[in-house]
Amino acid sequence: MTLTDVQKKQIKEEEKYRKEAREKLSESSQKKSKKSKGCGCFTLIVIFLVVIGVISGLFPSSDENKDKDNKSSPTVSDTTKDLVGNVNFDRVQFHITNQEERNWENCRFTLNGKYRYPPERGFLGSETKVIGVIRSSETYSLGAGEFTLKDGTRFNSFTIKPQDFSISCDGGFGYWSW
Image 1 (cartoon, rainbow, N blue to C red):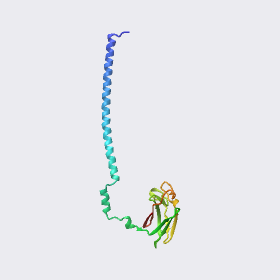
Image 2 (cartoon, rainbow, N blue to C red):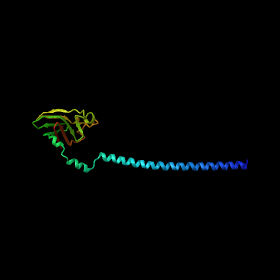
Image 3 (tube, one colour):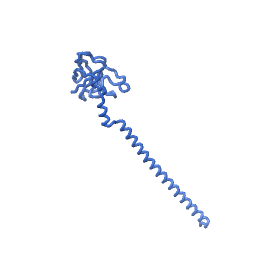
Image 4 (cartoon, one colour):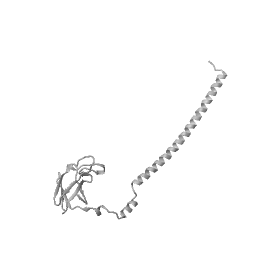
């Protein structure tokens, strides 16, 4: 089967048309890819700068902290009194002795900086119960297993060494370490 001159001319025109269409398509796709890459880079730069701004706002610089330290606002030591007492541990229980002439009221205990008694409840500990009163010159005994983390994990005195103990009561704070 041989092609006539008319058919050959028609095929050449079709090939020429297809070639032009392919070139136009590749040019438009290259333009689109250049535009999207440029927009993407710009977007990434803007997002990066916003993230840096947010992080720097969350963590104030040391100069700002110095200014805060120089202000005459009440500190913990100005509004609370050091508790006078004693804490002993016999591998099973903590024995807390109030050695003051006044009672300690609404107390919370912290062991190793993270185990708490009574356990924290509610949003930011807002519903946490407290020990009502530790009377003057009395000893309050508390089992080591009563101390828990926020997730409910109990303190195990056989695997973890008690290193420090703190008491926070209305108007007073005490800290002991071993």
